Length: 313
Image 1 (spheres, rainbow, N blue to C red):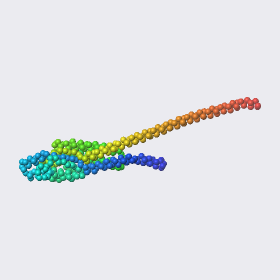
Image 2 (cartoon, rainbow, N blue to C red):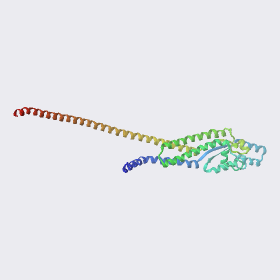
Image 3 (cartoon, rainbow, N blue to C red):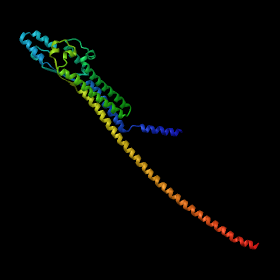
Image 4 (tube, rainbow, N blue to C red):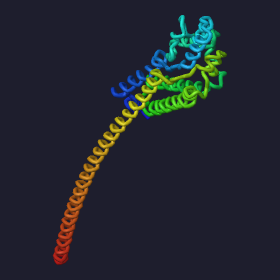
């Protein structure tokens, strides 16, 4: 193969690989959506909790009525993490949010609930069997973030809507599975009382174990924003695949029309060639016939002149 042919082939390959403006826009939008999952997961609230202290409040009031001891009352309120000078200041319902960016605040809350002891969240998650569903749920959520990172890298480097659609679809499914496990295996047992709050966080506080109850527990904005972004990437990728499919169909139709026109033109050229060949054959036959007639006339002339020559001799 010549050098010119190689150059032409290379140029053709580069032209095929060259991204269109729409492909570039697809990659940019996909990269932005994938990158947005990380600040959302880190800075937005991940888990909402509400604790019901109604029974503990009743206990405190009963102790106050029976014993009238403010010192004893203050000690019990400290176990609950409350503050103030009277039992009436203890609220029946306390709620809050867990955010990865403010995890130290939640760690401080756990330490208060555990009678002031330092709480290692990592050890608590890994070694407490009651928290295993939460660990599984958070692990699936972490996998979703890893998939978002992979999507970000792919979208920056290449135009692969099919692969990105598959990854974002897997992320959406894993996110839904994470939420199901969190709700059914972790939150619901705490809310219905199957699992005690004190036993779950390893607190030896009698009040917390007996009367601390979880009123509400659910994933919050960080989780659902990440899930929404993965779903958006999936829908966006599928839309691009449909558009590209339509473009390919149009190109195929155009190629088919061009091929049809070429075929018709070739057919017309073949008919012209056939007609010309027939005319050439007719002309050749006429020429052959004329040549035969001339030859025959020449022969007749020779035959007629032969007796005269014999007579002269």
